[in-house]
Image (cartoon, rainbow, N blue to C red; front, side, top):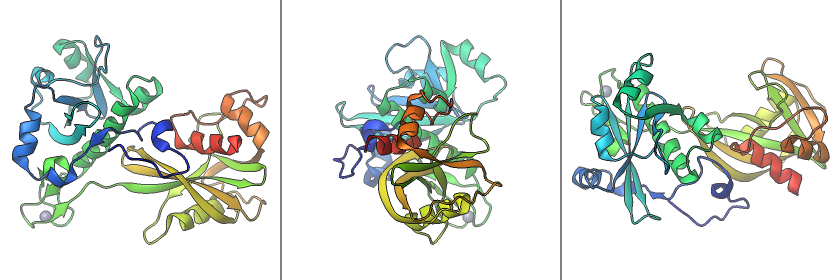
Length: 320
Ligand SMILES: [Zn+2]
């Protein structure tokens, strides 16, 4: 739902997966008749996910990932899970749904081509190629996170019996032990640590060559975000952090995270790098960092692309 931001940084203006013009109507999802009546409206549009790929109409010029119910019939999706995404307040309350189905990955491409001008693209690729508007990317993030949860929570975690979809796709109920299961969102903190005119960036081993980025890590049970920031930075780089300031958050549905972004002020500068996790950590001057995010550093080093909250946390520091 579009909300007035009270944050220092308007995430929905800058971050992909953070924009949504949908009112999710969480309080009305239980009304199955209401949800069904929305699903049957001619103006309703569907995001269709085959495994982890979104189906695109390669010939459509306007939002090629949004489909009418006709396409659902055409693709003959028997084992799909339907998820109510919400009503678009910017478009006369147009309803949006997601349908996720599991397909044979080896034959999917050929099957789609048989049905029409369709192809499946992963969410990261869609964002990197600007193949969907920010609003649609936000819907895709919602659909991807909830859809993946259904795939991995078919069985009850209490008694092991199969569970059924409820609440328009936002709950799974166990008919055997009556347990109710809800989609998860796992928070991770991501932080740019600064000391005066310098910032701390590092390279986890899996990062592409030449990229330096903010430190990050999962929040542990029973831990505040602020303490998670301090703990992760000390573990990875040996730096003690004092003041921690919230900047913005970004849904990161790979598979079900939310990145909670901070700036933190370092109390110490000496590095003690955890080489089990990090290939390197370094302090960079503001001037060098600015060149890196612009791709103009003589060293050839760069920062992550602007779809990520890491990029935005770094950019804000360089503009201060
Ligand atoms: Zn159960």
